Image 1 (cartoon, rainbow over the protein chains, first blue to last red):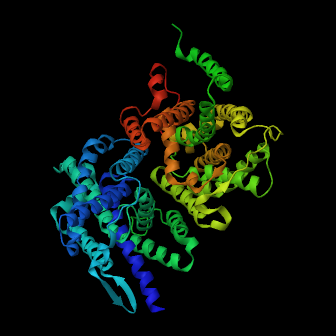
Image 2: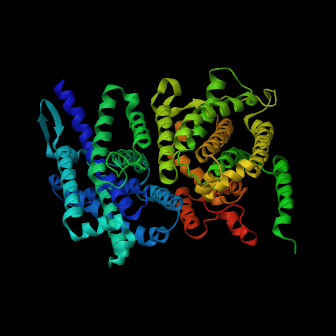
Image 3: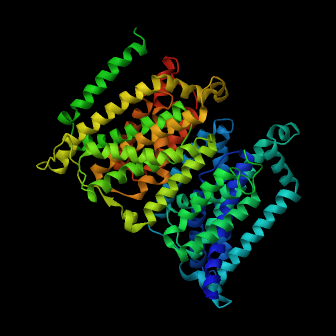
Length: 295
Length: 323
């Protein structure tokens, strides 16, 4: 009984750890650039596929399997640099446009990235095989949990703390918060908005691609994984409140754990429950649990 | 030289004659491609009442396409109702019943919150279709039996003959009726109120227009249109499945409206036509149509926000403005 409960909860927290990374990327971009980036799920998929390829390259060149996490993370972070291209090449032209057009431009990215992934990696699912278990299993309260899952949960927590530190303790973080708060004033005080936008968007992209890379040893990469995850990340940020990092953290836990519990108790409810909560939150607290006062 | 405005009725008449005569002259394949065009045409006329005329962008409108399509499937396979003349009103009614509460809740919001709420409602319906296997058939969906048209079973017709014959003209009749009705709606005082709400909600409110109520009406009308179009979409494939209600489908129909031009009455119809035929052409030479279409969408957003109609409309004053 306890073992089962621990399994369900840890499964939920693992999913929450990944969701947090993608949702954090969505939040930081929305907070500063006011763009709801539908493509952050596609970045997640891109990170996943790149992770598989990086690990494959590493092991086929004689890298020790136990170190597979190194190329995985490096690959995930490196492909996040595509954010620079996307921001400079597309998004910077629409900052002063109606948000409908901003949303549709990120939808265009979703379409393009989905097929770029299909062209590069094919349509069949790809995975890293059994590497996942090279860190062994841990026994917690009678439940057997892959150590890799615990590493990911710890890494996500560390990144959450790191983002908190970045936002509150560094000059760059203060600039980000000032730009999110009042763009014109920040600009008047000498902040170079172009550089802030590129950096923030790249940071957001890297969080998404890293999330994708980290999840992949535990599952398989499929070309639809991006458009499926974006609606979950969407639920996370709505529940937590658009633009709020603390909201992304709590929202990810709520969605990850509730989904996991629903699957084990009444599978039909799975995401249905999450979307019902999203609707309830939007109706009663449109700015989310951690957003500013309701509109 | 005659002005483009005076030319418009001539162009419309030529297009109408071409569409009526098409099954007699064109290969069956292209005639069947016209069927999704006409179904989406009905959907988009409604969607544009919300998008172009009221200024609200729904990212969950596939919900109502799904409702229309599943209403048809349930009626033909489980209830023994085969007459399309009964299925369409039933789809419209079901959509109205669902849209009444959903629209009342969504109409309180605008911009990104409206989009998010409609997306969430759409995903509720999608996950319901996907997960409640025994009711909905899950990811395999449900069969849609060939409906009777104009009171006849068309039993002697092969599937293709049925589709390019009676079904083609039935769809065309529905599209024509839907177009005429929408033309009346947008030109009525009600339509003018919607445009006022889009351009200046505060002014509309102070002139005595109840803004949320009018948004709600527009939402209901567009939902009914989407359901009728959704019901028309199902018979050619003979099957309905949950992807009809998925969020990317909602995104695609907004894309179609933008492609044709949301600021013109006929823009959405042009958008549906170009989308369907361009998709078919691209897919026949290159399997990755989304790559091309994503690039097209990005191009429209960046350089031609008025869509294809916007490129023609430079010659005349804009009929409706930005959302």
